[in-house]
Each structure stands twice: as structure tokens, then as C-alpha cells.
Image (cartoon, rainbow, N blue to C red):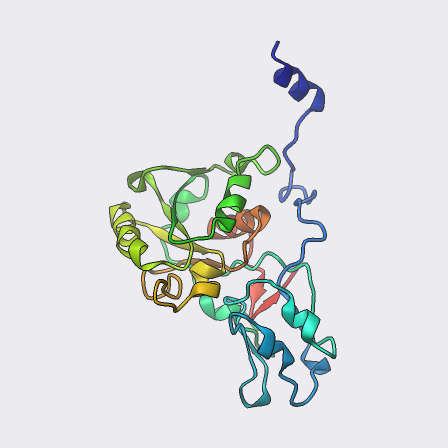
Amino acid sequence: MALWTLFGLRSGKATTEWPLKGETDGQTHVLGMPRYNPAQCLDGCKECAEVCPTHAIDAKDDVIQIDYGRCVVCQLCTEACPAGAMEPSNDWAFGVRGRADLYWSEEGGSSTAQPRSGRSAFRRSLHIRHVDAGSCNGCESELQGLNNPFYNLHRFGIFFTPSPRFADLLLVTGPVTRPMLEPLRATYAAMPEPRWVMAVGTCAVSGGIAGGTYACGNGLDGVLPVDLYLPGCPPNPAAIIEALLMFLDRAPQRVKGGRIGG
């Protein structure tokens, strides 16, 4: 018997039962999106907006506006805020169906984005074609973690495929660089109907750090119709799994109006 086989038999099952039985998701103590507490915000203070590298925070007319679709989770705003209005949190699962739900609002409220029809056939099995549209490989590193023994993505009936002709969902990372624009569109065109698109990582959602430069666009909006947005730099494997289950209607959307619920 091979040594690795013996080791596996002695170690037992390594796969977490999360999210089915609420066991560990592997992200304990991982910092997520900064949490905004407007009641603690000082009048006229713009320090969080001034240090934000992607303009996720804007202080227009002395009113703080936050776009979590631009956030790279650098935590600079939480370090710069003198009053604790921006504080660290463990809110790492920020998948949404509509881009508007990534904008913080005073009311929070309900999501107005409705999933497109025709997804019922994918609720038990989903095939994904991944395209790196100029990523730094941070998101790719997290995607690789999906198939490790701990997360074991296949247990959900979700698989990656090398061919767009067998794919249901196009998963895109990166800000969509100029050289990748046409290959990305060609991949989407090769997919059979119905087809879906998921933007993974802040770069794919809004362009991230490199967005809007001579070499990069501002993410997928305006390039392809996006059905699912998952910001983060990078989003961790558990966040990706939760977003995929949300797409399959096997998990609720927890983020509404820029706030994460239970």
C-alpha cells in the first residue's frame, strides 16, 4: 500500500461539512469588507476617502459614499479613520446578483435584482469555464483551493470544464485587459444558451487597482451581461462557494444595500 494511501486512511475525511451542517468554513479570523458606522463619523472628516486606493469611498459634499464593488479589502480606511466609523469585520462573503447591492445605503433594504429564468436545469449540476482576463493570479490561487480536500467543490455537483462549449457559467477574473477583450467575448459566444456570467474579484467587478488605465478596462460591466458579482482581493474559496450556491438558489443572497445579513 502506498504511503499516501495509508496516511489518508489514518487521517480520515478531510472535507468540511460546511455549509450543509454549519461546521467551519475555513475562514475564521479572516478580515473582510470594512464595516461602516455612520453614527460615529466626524463632520467634515474625509480621511478614509483620501487613503482609499480604488476610490471605493467617496466623500462628495461631505457625505460618505461606499462602493464595495471597488473595495480591495486593504483595511487602510479602518487604520486612517480617527473615530472608528470604518471598522474591520469578518464580512468576507459579498456575493450579489445586482451591482446596486454593492453600494452602501442608509436603509439597507431589499435586493431588486432578480435572477434570469432558465437556471433550474443547473441546480444539481453546474459546469464552469474560467477565463483569466488579466488577473494578478490572486483569484486563481483561491480558485485552486476550491478543489482541495477541505472544500472539495465537486461534492456540490459543480465542475470546471476546459471547453466553453460544455460550460453553463463563464467565471471571469481580472480587470479585462485590452488583449483579453476579444478572447473573452469569443469564449462567451462559444457557450451554448442559456449562458451565465460571474465576475470574481474586485478587478472583474470594477477594474480594481489597475482599472481605467491604458491597458485595462473597468471590469465586466459593459463587456458582458453579468449575473453574479463577487468582490474581494481576492475572494476566498468559501466566498466563491457561497456565491455559486446562491446562483443555484441553494443559498440566500446575504448582502443587500451594502450590508451583510445573517
